[in-house]
Image (cartoon, rainbow, N blue to C red; front, side, top):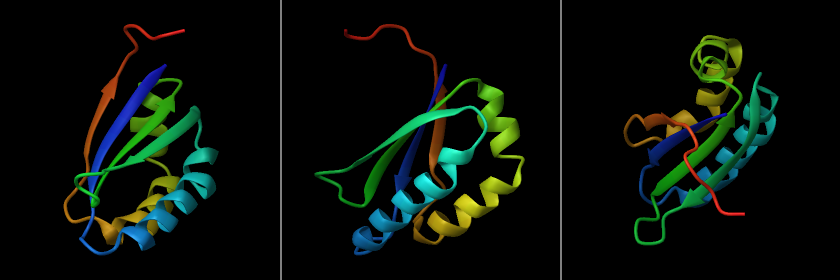
Length: 100
């Protein structure tokens, strides 16, 4: 399994709008993507315009090839993209250890 972590910064003062938009995008678009096994989004406390989006994929290619290269990516960006203050920083991780 691959963990995608996207560090998202939005324009200040638009948190309530973005909260609704990202939840809609996750439920209506990301959840339908091939290989998507779930997601989690956390909102900054000290920096309320910062969000950490974590999406669990079966394979790296499910994200980088099938999702990013397919029609769902455009739908996702249409929902959340207008809020971005800068392009999200995205990295992928594999699991090393976890608690019970």
